[in-house]
Image 1: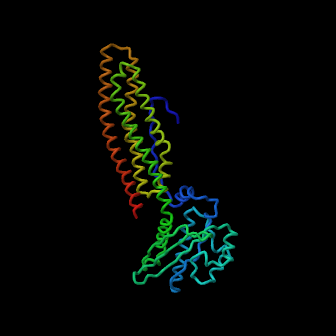
Image 2: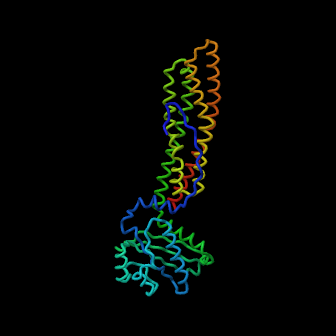
Image 3: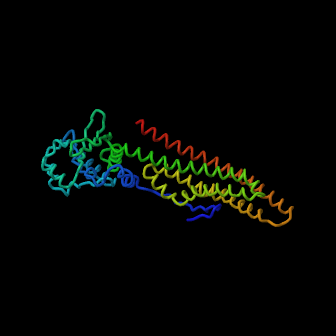
Length: 349
């Protein structure tokens, strides 16, 4: 949408969006880190090995749960075990295979025939003394290189709960992709911080320019251009937030939890409704009043009264805007500081 020089847009309220974190995260972030067309994106989940035959059923449940989370992620093409008979031959083997080197030649040939490049092995150990199950997954290429590895601990009393197992398997999937997740979160942090910090700078420039230049522009029209220039700079960042706010929220929500997305939504609403609609648009009316004053053909007394009214309204509106900007600036600073702290904590884990 085009904007005439010196004019300000009316805001459009954006709706709070909800997202499937992992589906969007994998499809749009991690996929950029890997070549989806390569064999490394086609994976096969081998039946998890177990430390004791008595927990083989638990191993099967965890295998199915992890495979489901992997499919839901959207990053990989997962070869379904039930559909590949030659690979399924491993079910007749001892449930101790946890390395490419131990795979039967027929299984490797089948994996290659189906263009798989990675086999995911899982191990379930029953730590009786600690009362937990340790679940470890290893992503291993057919070249025998270990690509990813991670583990989680699940309390013995929780292992039978379907929802709990799925949550732990999702956590495990998070862990093995921790590097990519942190990189994506960091990238999104810089995008949002630049956007918000630019807005704060531009809106402060508008306030300062109106306050400093208006008294000269009233009787010297050439100064009006300085106001127009600052307003146009403000319009650029405002139009970006107003027009692309939903997109920014969606991309941010791919990498950050819903609570943070909600905070960003509040900041955007504050910019659009409070700062812009309530305060900036009042300055636009003052800009219009300046132009009318410059072309006013009335008496000197009438012009003096009109000038005094403009300066009075300007002072009141600038004071209100500055208070609002201070509140917004603090909210943005706190929000970005919390994001930075969260990233630092994750790096130190």
